[in-house]
Length: 141
Image (cartoon, rainbow, N blue to C red; front, side, top):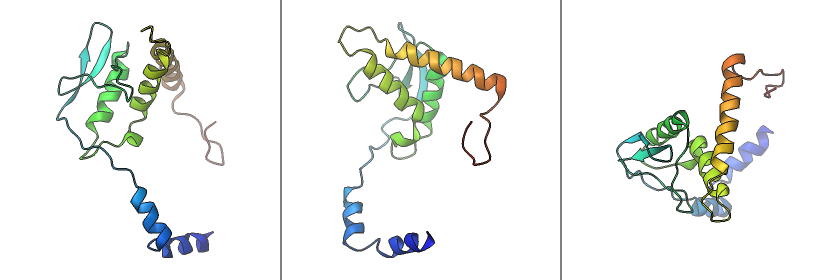
């Protein structure tokens, strides 16, 4: 296996490696100073310099749980000079729920409560039992 990795490293700058570098996605620059939790009429939201962010589909991200909004705000605060969505799992999950919850354009937003229920149950189980147990192979049980 090591030989394959060494061979791949040696060819990093050949034509294929240069083509891959060319396709690397540009990350958006951080445009805000503070990420806080804001109480809204509908629930809680992250405030990026006081403004509620939107999903890629331009829907407002509002959750019914303050703890989820706090986790999202922590992810936004942890961003450095660029915003890397791959380091923001809670925000990505909630954005997906917001987008999926209103598929008919009715404003029902059913996806967010389902995600909140899941996260609440998962969090309660983890609080009672501690982190997930590891098997000998290192996989989660």
